[in-house]
Image 1 (tube, rainbow, N blue to C red):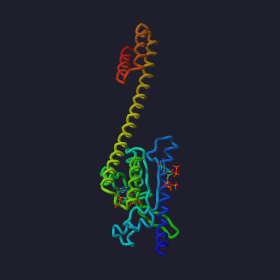
Image 2 (image 1 turned 90 degrees about the vertical axis):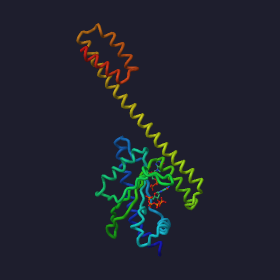
Image 3 (image 1 turned 90 degrees about the horizontal axis):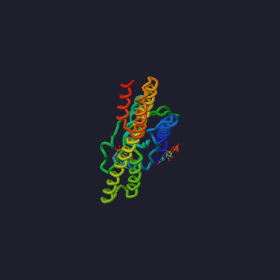
Image 4 (image 1 turned 180 degrees about the horizontal axis):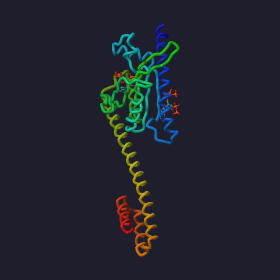
Length: 260
Ligand code: 0O2
Ligand code: 0O2
């Protein structure tokens, strides 16, 4: 009887999880189709198991008739990002839908405020309206946004917690905190590597456009008949093209302007 009652309560939550998964996967697919980098790597979702809901209610002294208001993660969506910076982009995407297809109730930033366990993630609690055969119902859902490294840590820590029935020995807790620090450093290193690649690409593009500019100017010099200077200029250009910095190429380009 009890189980049947709960299964009926969970129907709108299942609907919400399915709809939200489609929506966030849709965002990722849109980026992919445009051949653009997606801040969303992948999306998962679940409805909390009845036994976990009852467990959490007992732990928190929530009476059964208040469970739907007090337990915010009966419907849970998890969005994984490659890099820490992507999290803010996903948060912005969700904020831009506030008051439209969802309502933001609360944001919890466990990335700035790392939990005692070492847990990092950005949580957004939303209200989401679903349409069932019995009419409209607005339910609470929790969206967790995290990097792949944060997810790696949280997944293993969660399963250890389960294994030790939330009584992880102190020395293991300490090692998990160290592992969380290692995951944090991994996230930092990956962001720095990405920044360096982006910088290198920008410099490459800048140099390419300067070289095109310089070539045009050398051609113009030819047409103005300043043949004498041309040979030296071409030699310098070949060296700069190979080894010149952006600043050196700029200076060279200015010099050509003056000659012209
Ligand atoms: P795709 O197009 O293969 O990425 P579902 O109802 O099956 O769509 P559900 O029930 O949430 O989604 O499934 P699950 O098992 O939780 O995983 C959801 C999606 O996340 C699945 O892709 C997995 O392949 C993907 N996933 C899980 N772990 C990883 C991971 O470490 N890296 C990457 N890139 N993806 C992962 P889909 O939904 O089949 O779609
Ligand atoms: P599940 O389905 O087993 O993941 P509380 O549960 O009281 O600590 P509260 O106030 O309900 O927290 O909300 P909070 O902390 O914003 O979010 C709770 C959820 O965040 C948890 O759900 C986890 O999914 C995740 N989480 C929070 N802290 C940790 C942590 O230290 N380690 C890991 N691995 N995950 C964490 P539940 O209730 O555990 O449900």
